[in-house]
Image (cartoon, rainbow, N blue to C red; front, side, top):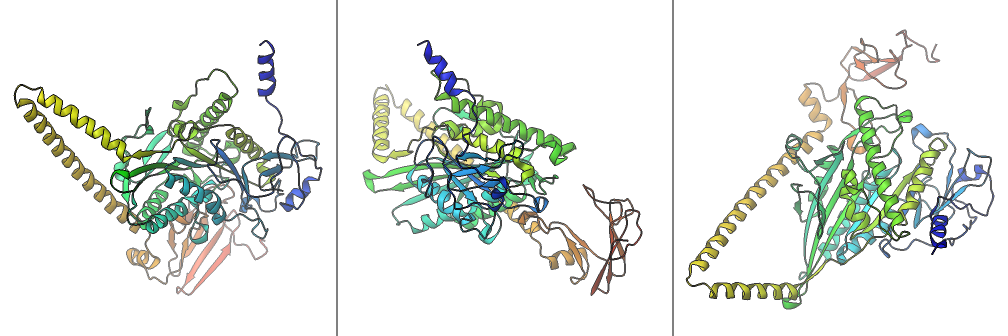
Length: 566
């Protein structure tokens, strides 16, 4: 008994991650995955794919590395994935040439498209999305969330872009409605969706029109049987993918994003998209209903002010993001240590709106998968190592998964028992006053419920109309914009380009005929820009007869430069 605490402390203390037994120079990591194998002491080397998500009660942890972005072009790659469950990071801050090795359930190499083991968006859908769908249709709650530093590719994995670049969220929902459409006629489905964001520790309903969001104050509640829920959050019934796709599009375009030095379209809020699925099978007394609640979470990225150069509102947003992620890390560490202690520590779920909402997904009835997104660049090694250590801690957490199934026969038996009890109560009354009182109460309740349903239906239809109008305004063609501005549709124009397709084309500037448009940060410039690297005077644009545009470089003082910059 005296030795037991010492043994527990020795086993539970902090230790360095195991190193591989294969030595090779850090430059080899820049070439990406190789054919060589590395064995990590204490864990077997993977030779095939990962087990399907949800095959055990432990949280499944996956790692995905993205390509270099424009800011990182020319840097050295410090990440390698020699097997499908191993990540190796070169340590350039020590004298050792051995890389650090981490083992996970699945590692996705999305750095170089020419590699044979390149993981596409479809790869994630086949291995994670299909398992999530199968679990949901069987009646198990699911949660899939993306974690990582700002600009690591979380939103790309979850939401993605157009065509082949669609992320897990649209692919999962499209797959869900495909399966519903292929089900036999006797199997009935009901699907509801909700979409919210946590911005500066405030909940916002992304399915509510912008004008009504300020009036719609949301809070998080917890029920011992149904878990966490948000009273007043819009839950829309959907019957086909096109309906839910419009809601995703609207929520994505009205989500809080901003530009920082590390990410031009940095998410400034955590987003949670949820869908509730009910499936009814069987006939007569053999009817059964299974239910599933699925959360798809896109977390805002952790960031360092020294790298993002955030100021003002961006700095405040970053501080709130880091605070909620710090609380998430504290909760994860507490949950990971529960299994190694005889007494349970208090887990501070309520210290943050994010952890309060994810309470059921992290410790309750849910099959949970985490996708940790990392950067391959040497300049982000510290953030990558932090993400991998956090992901390793998540692997230790276990959830209690229960199938959400209702037997129709059990429901019938409960109702029959309730009817017999009510009959006994009515029979014991001296007069028919009790019966009349019960009938009156039931009638009043029915009318109140009918009125409430009609009001909610009218509100939902109103919001759907407003969302459709807003999307129409956000999606004007260039010809429609030109007509609204009263200019020739053939007039040359400048438009913004963003890595996020939903933000591209939101800014348009028409170049007037025979006018010189000066660009820079100075007050006298017609197009005034701000940010790192923006000079007082940069260039001029001249439009001649809507057929030719001339660009002339300027010195920082506003003098013309030749082609060599002199």
